[in-house]
Amino acid sequence: ASTVAVFTYISAKKGLLNTVNTEYHKKVIEKLYALSEELGAECDPFHEGPLSNSGSMDEFLTRLAEQARASKHEILTSRPGERQFGTPATALMAHLLAQAKKFASDPFVPETIRTTVVSYLEGRLSALTAAHEEIAEFFFNRLADSHDWPDLKKSADGLHNMLNTKLYELGFGQSQVDDSANEIRLQIQQYFSEFNPRSTRKNGAQSLRRIERSERGDGKFKPGDKVRVER
Image (cartoon, rainbow, N blue to C red; front, side):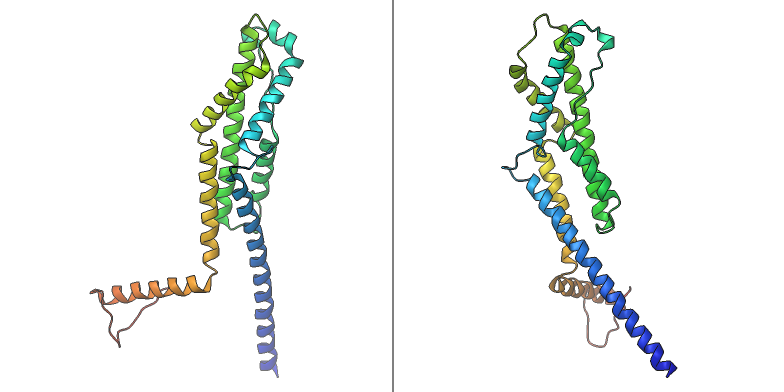
């Protein structure tokens, strides 16, 4: 009776672990699917809005102009060493910061993918911050040094180009963002392929052939030869 009880316990434990494991991987798949879709949207050439690179630039330049108008007197009367007017943040920057914090501790994103994603998000946020600070400093200094208050709308095109150039210098221009996003999606695809039975059988067969060749040393394998499988 005690033996039956032990086997019953072991069977129940295995069933519970299998259920937990299955539910965990379901969560992982759901999370990685959502991440892949979000990254794919960033690569869409028709993707617009405040969370796109172009949308974030427009928002930044609009807020920069608003800040300039509100601080016109302070800007025109300031001295070079006293010009600290701050740098506007954008919805994209807030989104990247929130996502980096979320993924940094997400238990349902595999560690290798999580590390890559957090590095990408933090790098992009750092590049945006640096580019915005440089453009804002240039813009406010130019306003302060000018005798006539310029047309801020006309200034926007030149600043937009400067901002775009700076982001490319820092490695996070739009095409570079697309490349990084696609690299992460390929990493996700590789993770999913490990759960594909056909892929598993194919990889297993390739590993077996490599072991067989290395066992003989001549690249040939004959019936009766021993195969050592290291785990």
